[in-house]
Image (cartoon, rainbow, N blue to C red; front, side, top):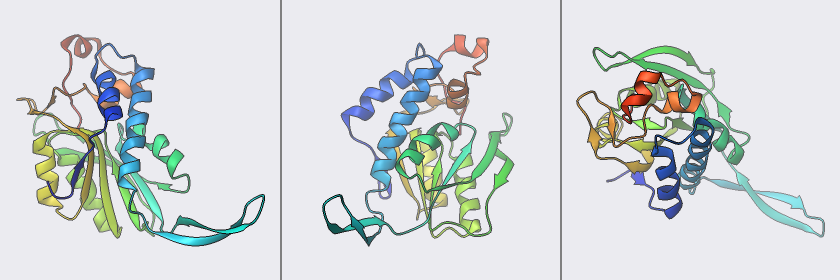
Length: 221
């Protein structure tokens, strides 16, 4: 699909298996999210512009290359925070801004509860959310980043449902989507199957006992 990049890599498959497993502990789950976020970011940054910079090595002077744009990370709260530090390891000068949504369980629509942007948007913004289910929060978040004035936007998600991908593509056909795995689809409650559970709950170890007993299905958008 044009502008949708699904990673085809043995490491992605390996780490996803451990991420999905309901027996995976919270600290291992967080580590797997970080590893997959690094793989996503590596793919999503392969075409970034560079400029020449003269440096001195211990032996001689040389012409090196450095990134030639301002980059912003916009994690969608709260699960997007699980991807942020890993990507900052690759892009330590990136700015971090935030958007917060929760899903209305009656309408399944995203409801904004937090937004923190500057008056001067970066050149390129990576919108981060581990789960792309219905696509409601992602599409709304991308719209807000566009209204902010970012020149280019890319969306990074660990897993997605085809319905969510289609929603975001219809709303924002100019935005590239980078996804580790596009799953089978949504169930009747708009949860991703086979999914990995609620990413936010598993990252922050806030899974209610009754939900953990029911097994996997994503409540993230």
